[in-house]
Image (cartoon, rainbow over all chains, first blue to last red; front, side, top):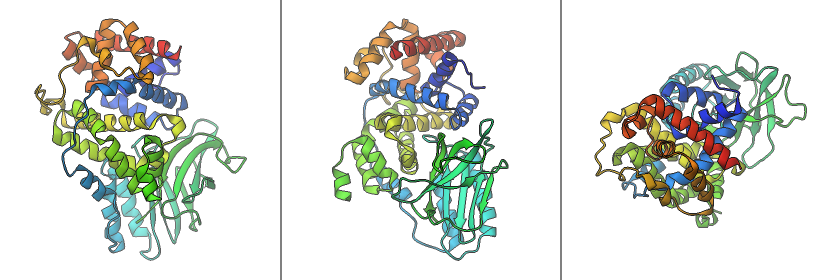
Length: 228
Length: 184
């Protein structure tokens, strides 16, 4: 349970940033960060304030080859047939939690079965800002867009999750619609903003969606769209 | 464009460029920050090969998450440190502290009580230093040990040879005092 009392909330956030919490508690805090603004602020406060302590660890030269290994992992694989390319991309996610990887693999497998191999295909994994725990997987192609919750995510009472696309190079989000309470949004056509390098984001909005057609609430999940 | 990015040295600006998928910016970020971040990881996981894995995972995560970094949320350096520390803590949880040898030849020497004097007197560290000094000795020691060595409650208790309950309450009371002092 995440406390509401500001002192208790700050203590929990501080323990989280220090790293003293056990795995269960740490995961609970990580999961709550997406929707709890106060908690997120408190975590940022401690990350900033305690940062000078990290100087107590002496800098050291990483082993040779470390950059090359990173470079190999961020460079796009050479195009191969659709299905194997997609599985190759799963490697990109290995840093994520095992539970997520299994869930993502399951939803991907389903997607491979359902999606025709022709036309461009896109994939985005959405997670809370500054977090690696995936909350949503978006898959898109000629047949449209499907966004699914990976782990149970519910908006605060009397609020809804709204999905936004930001075209590469643009700063103006375009609404793709409010996500139904079952945690799955389907569009039968591919939105024009949705292409390689675009950003997908989910914000918390009034039921029915933002009245201004721009996000009004906090962005709680975000991810980049990659061609697969 | 890429050569301009390569010439940049502001960590925050580089992270934003990485967020726009610039591999050149990521490389520049690595050149600027890898030694510092590797040192942080090594201090927590103790073994060079595991610290290198942590650094690799962290940079892949930086590549993937940079678009979510916004300068108003905090400084770039603290954001990077947060990612590396969480990856290092994950590695420790996954591998178990027991296989991560405590050989004093690896990483830095243990933290001494006068440790806060070693924090750089840079302006940003000033408030933290002043506020840490106001804490009781055991509160300060536990907080610094936990942050720098990435120790859990029970590991801190073992290191300072104190009951687990006392350590938990020192850390909580220390964080509370620290926050009150830092907010002033």
